[in-house]
Length: 192
Image: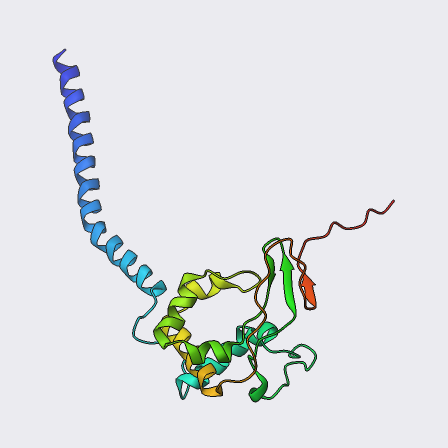
């Protein structure tokens, strides 16, 4: 029995030593892991002091964001037919062609009038609330950096007021009084 107890004690001592070594490595590795986590999170954090888009002015950054964001696709009448070649003076005046779907019929707003009637802060809050109807991609703007939203506002506001307000949205089931694009998925025709 005495020999067996010594062997067990050696195993326990070896096991205890292994756990102690592992604990020392864990304690040494913890600061390294924490530092890696902080660096990783910082890489994805949005800097609050500067927008993502840099340009010679906020208005130029806003112009760029309007173009790459596809805002003219819906908010500028004739944009698609012109292949994006309409003069800036014609941009963002709203559209009386509706978008009809399960939500009813919605219209692309006259952003030039909207920007003239809202403060910068109210503009940002409008996009943060994401309370509009489809097909406006509201969720894209909820995560947009505030500096970029402000740049868009300043560009649009610099264009001045022009045009008339877009028609009021129609609820589901109400027939639109303007031309509209039907945005309801269709099943493909069955082929034999």
